[in-house]
Image (tube, rainbow, N blue to C red; front, side, top):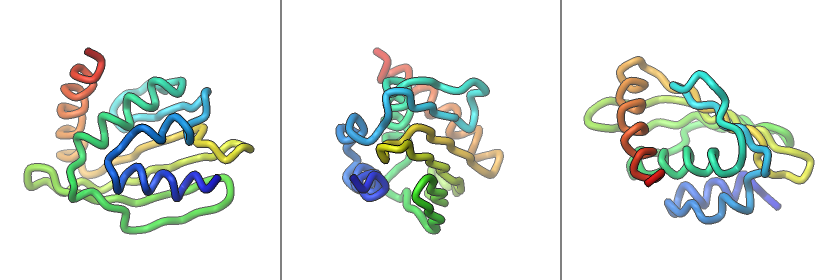
Amino acid sequence: MNTLKRWHEVIEQGNPEPLDDILAEDCVFFSPVVHTPQRGKALTTLYLTGAMQVLNKDFHYVKEVVTPAHAVLEFTCDIDGITVNGVDIISFDKEGKINEFKVMVRPLKAINLLHARMREMLERLSG
C-alpha cells in the first residue's frame, strides 16, 4: 500500500472515505491548537475531515521530505486573505498505515483563524 499516494488522493479529491483504509486503529492526531493528543482512528478521521472542509481549494503542498517511516509535507493556502503556512508530520506503522499525524501552523493570525473555523466545523460534524 502506498499510503502517502493515497493521502494525496484524499486531499485532491476532498473525499475522506479512504481514511478508513490508511489510518491505523491506534492513530494519534496532534492539533496545532489542542494541547492533548487526540487518540484513535475515529478522532483522527474527525479532525482530518474537518480540516479538509475548512482549508479551501487553495490548499496545496509545496515541499515534501519522505522516508519509509515518516513524511513531512509543507502546505499553504489562503483563508479570508490570510496566508496559512504549515506542515503535516506523518508517521507510518509497520503495515504502512498512518499511526501519527501532527499539524503545525504559522503565523499566529492563521492559527487563531483555524482554531475558530475548526471549532465550528467539529461542532457541526459531531452533530
